[in-house]
Amino acid sequence: MKIHILDDWFGTLRNLSCFKLLDGDDVTVWTDHEPNPERLAERVQDAEALVLFRERTAITEDLLSRTPNLKLISQRSVYPHIDVEACTRNGVLLCSNMHADTPSYAAAELTLTLILASLRQIPQQVNSLRQGNWQMGVGKTFRGRTLGLYGYGRIARAVADYAESMGVNVQWWASDDGLKRLNADGRKQAASRESFFSNCDVVSLHVRLKPSTKAIITADDLAAMRVGSLLVNTSRSGLIAPGALEAEIARDRIFAAVDVYDQEPLRDTNSILLNHPNVLPTPHIGYVTEDEFNLQFTDIFQQVRDFANGKPSNMINPEVFARKI
Figure 1 (cartoon, rainbow, N blue to C red):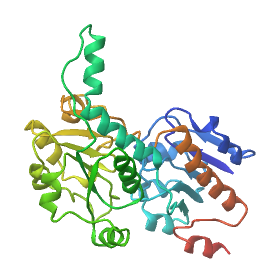
Figure 2 (tube, rainbow, N blue to C red; figure 1 turned 30 degrees about the vertical axis):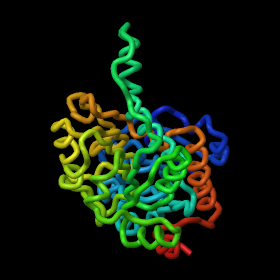
Figure 3 (cartoon, one colour; figure 1 turned 180 degrees about the vertical axis):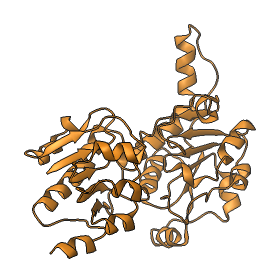
Figure 4 (cartoon, one colour; figure 1 turned 90 degrees about the vertical axis):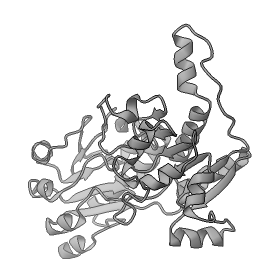
């Protein structure tokens, strides 16, 4: 098959053991990001299959209408960036392993890392030392503090396990479905939404972005956070109301550790999320480890193999395959 892999920014995949699953295929790997559908279509004109790096590229009707040879899109996890109906109209099968009960430990570890680095002022202390100075301030201990986890999914539970092992008090806020799972597991939600935001030293977001969760974190939620508290977002930028976090940071009330942005890659150094001293920004590296890549792309490449063998797996729009049987 002629396979195009998009947005492999560091050319990582060819060095993973799972890449052997594509032996014998004609594989093109793109190591930059092309957001323009027309130019992207020109690049992948001969592609029979597209392999996606999570949500880095949007798959739209405009793109699909320009790629008549395309038969398969293979990726992993949720797909808010893909117009599934347009895929179906254009005869393109979408396969995506939803990895039930398999959390991204890489993302959970980054969440913990950002919390500790923020509380202990690691970037600022390192920068002070490199400039020929010594200590620049006094940090905070995580043990004994209260961590608020918004959302009750796989990653949030992994973060809770890490935090509780360090002697941290964990509070929860979740959707109605999440609340049912919380209660079933013997964990309790905070008394109210306002008390959740106002009583936690650290609030970390762990919710999938979908229409019902877009802008679910409001300016009032952030305003309720205590002075000097920390907001961590390793999930999706769209969970927060547009401009709300930037406005709260500008007020110099809270701190933030951010791994996700409205526009990615974010290269605007004038962004308050990149240049404000109260913010620790990272470039969407929550799942960016060799181990996580090998895990995810084993699933993704196996979906390509299954499709090539006439037995596609993890079909999101199976009606496309049914037409061809």
